[in-house]
Image (cartoon, rainbow, N blue to C red; front, top):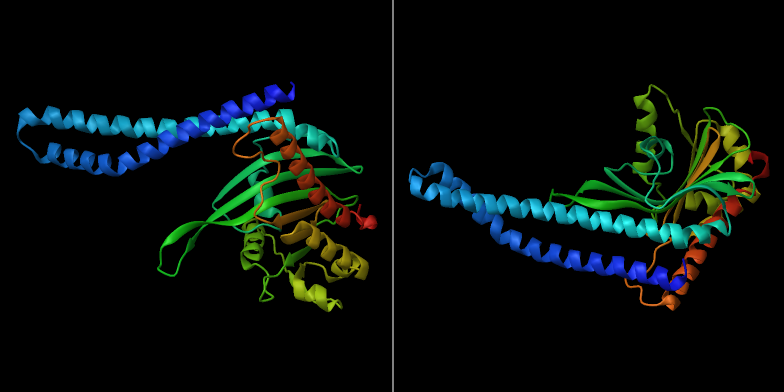
Length: 326
């Protein structure tokens, strides 16, 4: 498919999504008025003894119910359109960009990691809802790589005692196959916040997962000779000897370099036969703009996608420098 047709298809999807989203907003405003009226009709219908008015109130209730069903179906329709557009962009634009650097074995524009990985990765916080896109499985520099853009949300209590939905992670997650198995040994490198503390929710989510299966993690915190590294990262491991084997002075510099390239908070977990990398940078890679007008904008989108991919793979390159593990 040529670029003109690609632009036209994306533009058509965007136009439909904007139109239906505007209708959804309008109906949402009306809902604030119609829902109380429907509730009032329901109360009157239940309590009233005047049979002559019951049919009128019943019609009012039926209208409100029909309105609610229409609103629900509209939300579902918008979601389907967004997924169809994502699928189209993935197959006709993103996939070709990825194939320039990675030998693709599997690509799902609307795909994501499964729940087992999210809970046991060792690099992600606890969450209540997850959203994934651009799930990629392939070969990079002779190694199996799995990639996904991920967004995790959780319910958190604010200062007023109310619970609200907050984003606890947003960014790329990469899983690389090691050249050897570490068995049940694990080394986790967690970037600290400005106060020097690692994200406790990540630690708790990881620990609680394995405890649910009766596995004792017995993690200990390791302090290394590199003061700058200690100030930036917290290292937790089930095997101190393995931690020092992995975190050589040179590899610590590689991790610091990878974090600088990532432009976000970087967490790394070596365990089993994989190393998992999560970068919390509040960025969703491989996306086009909200309005696609012409082929120049399409080329600009491709350039941004290549920059996204290069940034992610530059982080991977730093990790792959640990030759004895790969």
